[in-house]
Image 1 (cartoon, helix red, strand yellow):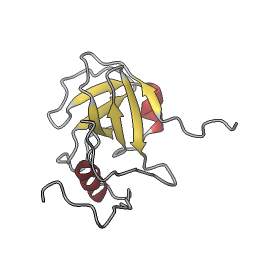
Image 2 (cartoon, helix red, strand yellow):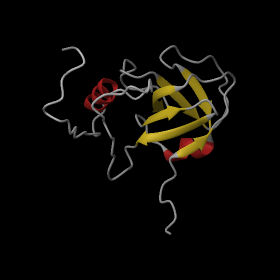
Image 3 (tube, rainbow, N blue to C red):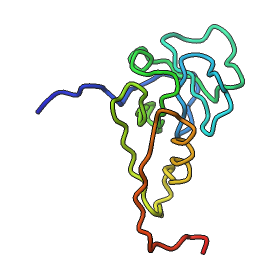
Length: 137
């Protein structure tokens, strides 16, 4: 079996617990701090000053810092781990979008669709059954 070319799961440290969910990963102040997802500051070292208001939280991980580009999308779980799910460095990003999510998970097709529309160069191809009725109908 071949080795992993690019790790996508990273452990981090944080002063306070980081809320689970999707985040835009940032190494510095984003050009446009207003984004559909909260901004998560990733650093190699602890902050010397107060966290700017445009960041929802802050994590420390040298491996993660060296593996991401500003604007990558990651998901934080409750075990101080981040998984990078959309990477600007990747040749291809794949996202599975289901017709309906009844599991109560954080992954919702509206969130993913808006995220990908606003996150150039990430693109999505959604394959839905044309006979499926909307939940709103």
